[in-house]
Amino acid sequence: MWLTFDIGNSAIKGGAFEGNLLRHAFSLPHEPGGMEVRLDEVISRMGNAGHSIDRAGIASVVPDSAACLTRLLQDRGHATVQIHSSMRLPFRLDSAGPETLGVDRLAAAAAAWVEYGKPSPHGDPRHVIVLDAGSAVTCEVVHRNGVYAGGTIGPGPELALNALHQGTAQLPDVAPEWPDTVVGRSTAEAMQSGIMYGFVEGARGLLRRIRETLQGEAFAVATGGWSHLLAEQAPEVDRTDEYLVLKGVRLLMALNEADAG
Image 1 (cartoon, rainbow, N blue to C red):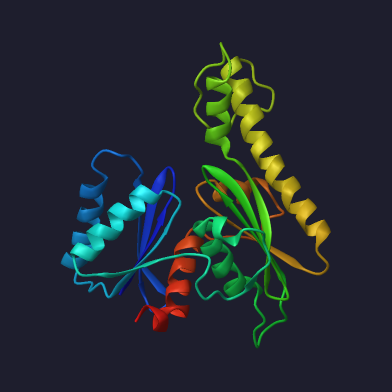
Image 2 (cartoon, helix red, strand yellow; image 1 turned 45 degrees about the vertical axis):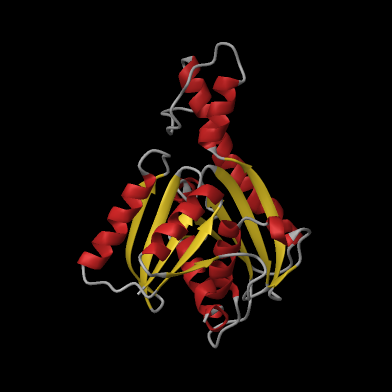
């Protein structure tokens, strides 16, 4: 069994794969206190459930947490792979400074291209757009010719609300919740409406504008914590795939298994 991890700014997600089948998934809040204990408990539960961990893969945007998890896994005798842009990929990179490309973006794009875009006996290739909506909202574009073309990066709802609260003297700290009405009757409701509707309409606009730059069919898949809201509110989204990054980590581990030894 292979363990995969997606270490983000607000959560640490993990999955256990048998071949390409996801058997178990989990999510932990990314809090500094006690992180090693929580991760150790998860790994222990996998072993107690009879799952033998053969290899682990990590896609992380938080270097210190990745180092902590790598040390924990290696101390338990598990070979560990760090996802990076110079490893073998299912597409070619056409982006400036590929070493600065977030590995979560890379993994999501790889999984989306192979599952939804790459030519197969059942269909011709098509462009793929990945919209990952979490702490940040990112778009990745893989051209139907098998080239990663780049993407976009913007703030997610929580970051945007925090910026309003911290960057002003009187605006309150408000939870990122979907409002009952577009026109808020209070300051808090107005902030929720502006941020949440702005988030949805911004995502829809990005997808439309990206599609306008592409010739031919473009398949849009959403992932991340806000992907289900987008699926409800944005008809431009063709599919949601909650575990896209974890699937991408497993895919890249498999592509580079021989190199890892």
